[in-house]
Image (cartoon, rainbow, N blue to C red; front, top):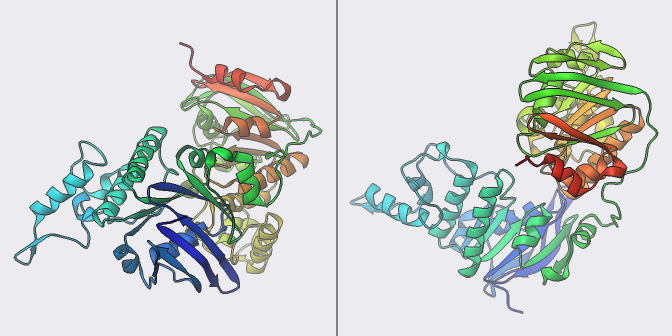
Length: 496
């Protein structure tokens, strides 16, 4: 079988870690090759070797049967390789045209020919999107538009191989559809495409073939996607059978721990009534605009409650600020963990201890650094947070490990009610399973959990009861034995 791009025995080591171990597989021209694996499986490291950003310790990369030796990214670009990462490589204060042509500016008598620059850029960008001004600065664009500029850059450089690293993580459904149309067009033009994603539905929708990595090793390459199913790929990724990916087990429920009566506020238009028992995971499902996140903002004191009352363990409480919510043993894991959850420029240890620093004071004044280190090490060990050290910046962790850091922050407090807003969004299947286990363990300790998810199979798989919201109100509350996709969706969809 003839491949346009081929990896042969690629090995890459870092101090104490073998990130890639004898990786071998190939990608044909005119095909889209999926690359899947848990966080830390080696996918990003492989893309960095392909782009010339990393040099492998062993093995070779072949293009059209010719062995390549990339010592830097320019070597890879010259060989017709473009890698489009999640963190887009654009200059915000430069125009679309300048970014598209960067490194290849047309010149006239020793000066940049701006007219020719715009003409070439406009011709290229029209192939990717309509009604677009090449004079607009990149900082004014949406994520989806910036992605199109990156693709345009690759085409301007005559790339024959294009790799996409989690390209849909920040896109809407409409933007994803447009991106897929562009990628399929590139395939039809004969490009060899690598597509990295943790979203299995995307792999099955767009990829012709697929390779699975686990712990830096090549596990299997599937050459016919129609002969593969979701469960098989997940099994290869995690190295175990997942008869029940959600791991749900019936638990004994205790007393009522949380009660909401006739709550109303911003985004929650109708009176909301809800209870949570000790040991219970209550899922909340609804479509965009249903008011789920808005409800959590009321319960965490981020927005004012206009009417109604809230009780924690039978005592009425006031929730006028996050500080009051925490004092009343209520915490929030926000939907946007990067901007609202972790403090990216702070270490893992600082993030874990941020809520409990008042407990780590000596003489009511000095921070007890030893106590902070012990707390950080305890949760890194207990929750299996994958980090080189407690001093690693939180921004450098995978999504699943960032979520564990946020959870650790609250586990060091005496919290009764956990509000979890999309806690598994953007993390791989193995990390999701670990988050579910943490949720179940909290419930087994008598905590109450309210859990928002837009993933219907997930919210059905994890929850003891399910709340369905629509247009700022609760439409119904179902017990687990009543769950069906048809029933839940019929409740969530707008009435025509």
